[in-house]
Length: 430
Image (cartoon, rainbow, N blue to C red; front, side):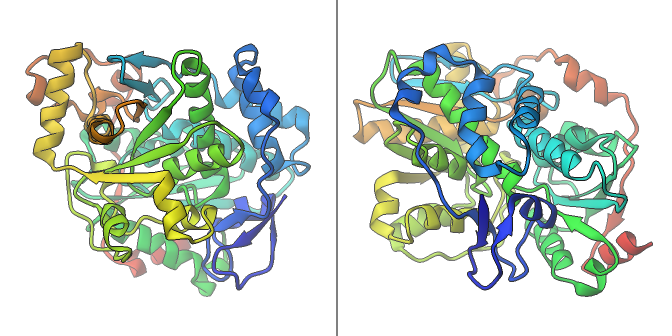
């Protein structure tokens, strides 16, 4: 499979090159040259397949033959070493829990998959690769855990000071070994801008091999399509019209769901559930795409004012606004509405949700008001105890900490403070 840049001004790329480089030379995101739908029999017989079997069949066209099938099966099995349960709240709404991995966030799948792909490509390479990644919360911890100890790979994580939860900060600043954290005086958008600037800085890239583990990287982005297939397997015998409500920040997750749809997954619609960073909600009303500086909210992993992956969504639907609008709705919610939703789920369903899942739940409710025959699945993208102060204040009940969270709490934070791109460049070249 070859990949092309969405800026259309760079040579086509192999999967290996797209993973190692992250961005194309013309600053564009990579996109697969072909998407071949899976046979209908695959979905008709999905009940007989294991999660690793489903994932392997879904992903192999994007990677073969650069990683041999036997090795790819091993990568998939190692990536999917935890569960993805559906919890039904009522006849109309379920949640897909994506927080049962090592850092208790949905990004564990993409980070683990990419780390193993990069490890495979780097096994005979003496040159060190530096993974440079910006995080608004959960990406950092997932990438740190996924790449910990991978041969020939150094990880540098930029995160906005004071804008991630205490537990998220612990998960990305306490691992040591080949993981380094940079605490940025600014927003997530500032962190992301620094990372993109670094990729385009020839004085830097001539001296070191940089790649990204944000969802701009195809190996981080594509495996997220697995979730939607796993949910379909669990629900398709009970419901005909399954809709996904995805808490959306950088739009990689919902975009991966749309890739699953392109592969033939019988899903008719997606809901992009936004907090007050609502550039896509506004776009679907006005047709004007106007990125704005991000606003800090309690669902911090979605505090993105310029979502990188939206251009991939536009590409999927051939840049036709009406086609895109047929496949996606979008709603925006305030922190107060999010808190109310968390309390409602706790009181009505005895379900404790994190703020991001609560935004997804609100998206389900908004969509179902006008589409009463659908069954809406919201993605619960992180364990509620990762946002302990918000969750406990809302539901007024102490929460037990899972082992994955307890294991980082006693560790000492190690982070270097930076304010500008020049600070980052000096750090990387020191």
